[in-house]
Each structure stands twice: as structure tokens, then as C-alpha cells.
Image (cartoon, rainbow, N blue to C red; front, side, top):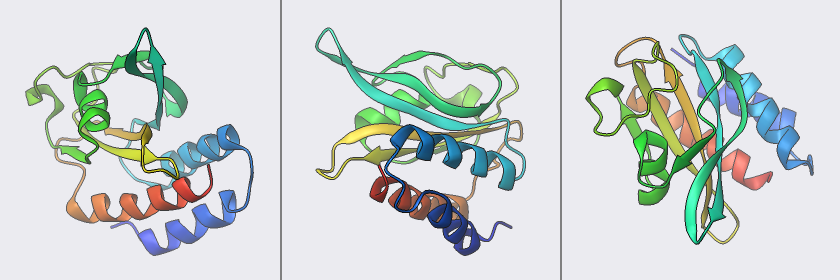
Length: 153
């Protein structure tokens, strides 16, 4: 069981008041990868417009090499970004259109990250080799961490 209150304090101490977006996202990915058990990937995909379409581009992460570009509406990350909703997927192989960047991933949670105007500017993506790894407690705790991230971008 993860103590998200302590993790929130650690994240706030690490990135609070730091004016460097890339550094904050990098340190967040490193902290989550280090602290949360049973992860094989932790990181961000960042929104970008290309040819009038929104896409997600690989951002700071920890883990194995990953897909570089994901279209909105595609896979777990693209769907979470397009729908602006948290997606907690117990079995990624059963998710329609799942993009298998790492065949070892079995479950995933993706949380949209917003700017000060409320627009989705990216997603926090966590993968695990264990099926059903992410719980409602994880979703709630990670949602609190995303608020800290949003305040420090």
C-alpha cells in the first residue's frame, strides 16, 4: 500500500516553486518510478498540434524505450487525453486499440494533466507488468499528485 500523503509531500518538496517544466516532469517520473512498486514505466506524453490534429509526444520518463508519437483517441494515452478522463486499465491487452510500446506491460493508468486554463497539455502514464496493478486508491492518490504537477508547470 502506497502512502500517497507522504509521496505528495515528497513531490511538492522536489518540484514546488521550481520554474523549470522539463526538470519538474523529469523528477516526477523518476520519483514515481523509484517509489511506486511494480512499475515498468512511468512518464509523460505531452500534447502538441501537428497538421491541425492533437497528438501526444513522448516526454520525460523512466523505463524502457517507448512510443514517440500517439494520436489523440488512440491507445490508452490518446483516449485519456481526448476524453479528458482518467483511464485505469486492468488488462491492456483487452483495451481496444491498445498500443503495445512494451510487451511486458499488463496494466496501465493514465491521468490527464492540465494547464491553468483547464486544457489538457499531456498525460501521466504508469505501466505495470502485473494485471490489475492499479486500484482506486492509486487513482485517487495519483490524481492528487497531478494537481501538484499542474501547479508547478
